[in-house]
Length: 119
Image (spheres, rainbow, N blue to C red):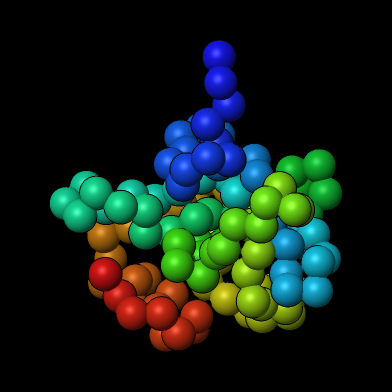
């Protein structure tokens, strides 16, 4: 079977989960844990990045606007133009306390923090 991941821009969500995330300096800062999709628009809204912790303890989940990610084929992962400190200060939640993705306040806080328009 031919590997088509490098010949076009379509990819299965299950393939994205676990993909590494780097900052602009090339520092590995986490990995994609999940993706939040719009049921109406049919597009990815947020990448949920797993960040921090050790062996799953103290790990935090950071919803990043999908448009803040760019895929770098050389790194085999996504790049965000954020520092570790910016991520630590951004909207996040802990395992087992997933937010209400339909809450306009959540969407507004993510949009304001990262400077991307709300959907």
